[in-house]
Image 1 (cartoon, rainbow, N blue to C red):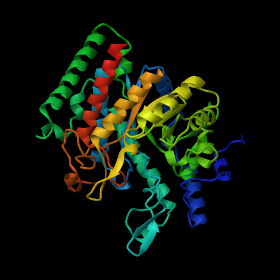
Image 2 (image 1 turned 180 degrees about the vertical axis):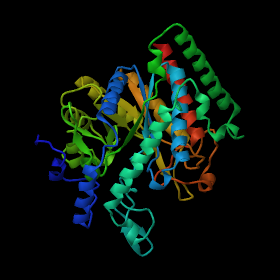
Image 3 (image 1 turned 90 degrees about the horizontal axis):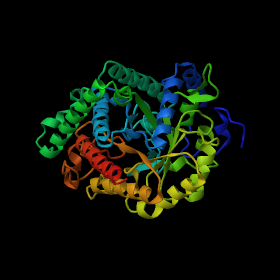
Length: 453
């Protein structure tokens, strides 16, 4: 393989390439980005790698969730805290169900770039570049807004920094302490359309866990700190390699390079080609790296990605995120699980039940059906059981807001309801009721599987 450095990706074809028309403005922006402080630290990255290594052994569970396409306009305290609250509520349910520490990784503070299936958007007689996220261009359908603007990388950096600052302030102040789940209540507990059973089950989970924590502390159990400590990590798709490479640095007293825009970057389904720029870039950083694996992935693809991105087979380095879709998961997933198992390579398998289940409603809205999402999770767990492998995490697109973007679930959203509060910048997200319901369904299934073994 070629000698790696942070810009060696430029010698490879770039899928989903962002072609900035003003190269001088691009280089000036990248120079400034290189000068700015890192958004995360190598210590945080290494701590997450340790958690992922334990999840690979079945000792932890990884909960990844947040917006499909984060927007700069959503850099507001209520929006940020609501996303944290729903992830914390879900983690409480999973901790109670599995009695394993849950690692929370938010799709936030950097999920500003989105791949698109089409480079152009056509409305009537007008054809403009597609919207690739707030890190690249703007969503308004005008020639000026859709122009690729390098200055948006600086805007994304600054808003990511503000988001991380607020998240750290909340966690440091005890906001996320498992002893006090009442801090995380969202307004939906007062909503009549949340079933009494679901509301009561959540409160019972919190009460049971609090009692268990107090009992363990009374016994002097030191590991209780590991269960209750909340380290909140971030992740995003590393689509714009200009942005990611500008914040890739060496660190004193550590070998190698760290990408310091986020703790856990991932490579998307559209950019995971072995001979292209994204794999080249991400093979050279010390961060744990995720890869989305869809129904077109072959055994050779998955084993090849494992070898390219983690040549030393280091624990905690590689996260494979299956996103097969309900229609494909039973046929397509198990051979991939078995091939990686037989190769003996260390990976963490995570399920993304969202992206393979996107459909177009009759009303014209992109949506996802709650039952399809649940089926993909359940059938993925079945595939792991049959292959003798471990599902170590879940990756969801969700929000702490009362949106109407995915049909079904306890909220009872139908196609006719989608227009009520369809607020996503790109793909449909679970609302807070649906996200909590997923946590209970997943927790019950994992608890049943643990009891069976």
